Amino acid sequence: MGRVVGIDLGTTSSAIAVVRGGEVIVITTSEGKRLPSVVGFGRNGERLTGRAAIEQGATNPENTVYGVKRLLGRPAGDAEAGGTSTSFSSLRSGPRGDARVYIPVAGKLFSPPEIAAHILSRLRDEAEAYLGEAVREVVISVPAYFGEPQRQALKNAATIAGLTVRQIINEPTAVALSYGSGQSHTSTVMVVDLGGGSYDVSILDIREGQITVRATSGDTHLGGTEWDSLIAGWIAATFLRRYGIDLRRQPTAWQRVYEAAEDAKIALSTDEETVIDLPFLAASADGPRHLHLTLTRRQFEQMAASLLERLAAPVESVLADAGLAPSALDAVLLVGGATRMPMVRRQIEMLTGQTAEIPPQPDQAVVAGAALQAGALAGEVEEVRLRDVTPLTLGLETVGGMMSPLIPRNTPVPVSRSQVFSTAEDGATAVEICVLQGERPMAADNETLGILRLEGIPAAPRGIPQIEVTFTIDENGLLRVAARELLSGAGQTVFLAATTSLTAQEVRQMVQEAERCAAQDLVQRNLVEARTAARQVLYLVERNLQRANGEIPPPLAERVMRQVRALQQALAGPDATRIRHLTAEVQQASSAISSLILLEHTRPSEREQ
Ligand code: ADP
Ligand code: MG
Image (cartoon, rainbow, N blue to C red; front, side):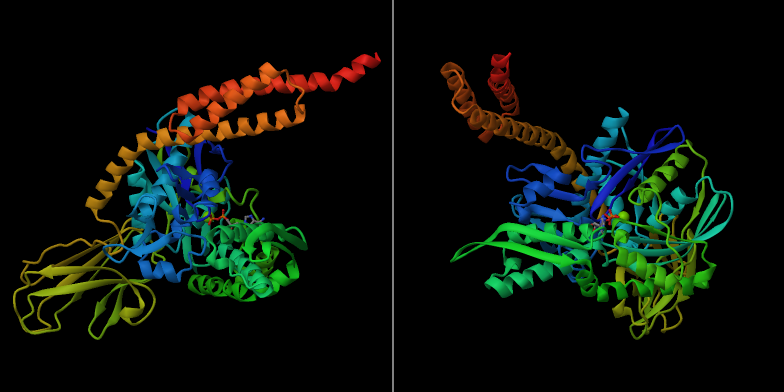
């Protein structure tokens, strides 16, 4: 059986892990165990991920996409409302009202799965480099609150990245898997995951060989980013008051503010007070303006009061859905980077009346669980049965614009439910079935997943035709809808295409595009790496020249200057091999200079001897 890996695609950072010899190994990428979920489109058409994307993003914000997970499977309007405050690229509406991202340097719209695919393929490349073998199959985790279109969009992203999704598992289930593996007694735990862009609360039963999600709730628009926004907003308001300059209108400055805001937030998890220093933040008629502010934890906690309040509803809702009092919980587990804020921990402890537990590696709990499930599918570790529940009620629109539920939320999956409906008008030969997801009684207040048109119904007075609608959710939480007219038997079965998902044709095109780009991307990445190495060497040689302070023999100095100029010229061009070659030359010269400097420094003591 082939190897299956586990991936945690996070809003802010992502990770990949495998099971080897029964042990979970979270792969250390060239950027550590978590890779920033950022994709950048460089000015020369190169596609960058992780830190490289963040770095070029400082001067190229409109071609840099942050938090793409928040856009997956979302209608354009919803994505805007959701506050993709860390995404500086422009959101547009796709052909079916789905969110698309306009990338000026490419001059085109990208769908969120296409962008997410870059992160997935980077992770895959890192895993392949580590394992020394091809990786084709994955288990990917999603927030429990992810609805149908979001899951489908993630699957599309994997397909575009050339990966086959063996299973989609909910993140809290993954946490429970990594927490509960090797545990024999039964326990009921609450998993609270506050990451960068989403908040999930679930209650699970962990038993030997089986994990059951009993209830799940959350908020897809609440995460650490909202805390960053508070600090960034406070900085902007202070700056505006002091200097009359609106930082929000200056993308580069605004990005620096955002990064500083996140650093301050993280610092305040351990320190009582932090200093925010941003020199040369903006220019005014009176010269450059610097920012120097002190923020205390107390002030920060006061600012965050309304965010803390938002933590309550999902906790109350899962307890009610599971029919449990907080005291019935055996443990409250905190995962996700943002739960490290003392105020969050305190709030959860207040809401549950329990001391919260933080697993040894809270950042790795999700990916470890995904890898364990991947290992189980590949037959490497013993299988734990997972039973998930549907996160939201699924139903259809009936007369008067009402939502008629077919599968209530928190129903264990896989599940299939049918119900018979009829026509509302005399002689109707076709009906439109509007598939909805959500908890509100009026159809318009819920999310429309798709509209399915059933034709060929024999004309009859209203109420006579018998239309059976079947909703089926597979173990990945993916929904299929079928409709059939029973009396005539002449009905047809139609499958739902979620309105906000890509069509199969589009996915195929994107796969081809990604394959076509792969070779080019490799060339570009190679070039970027060569340039980065060259700049580093140029910096070193410059520093060495300064330190040598004119003490270098003229022939060596001339040769170095010539080589430096050649390298600077090559840097502007696209020839990575030439850049590497010249870099090696400058590197050698630089070492020669630094040994001269060493010699200079040791001479006096030699003289003393
Ligand atoms: P996701 O899975 O959504 O990508 P993570 O679980 O990796 O998110 O958490 C990322 C969030 O956690 C970010 O908002 C980050 O700023 C925040 N974070 C990380 N470490 C800390 C810390 N020590 N204190 C406060 N917030 C933190
Ligand atoms: Mg996460």
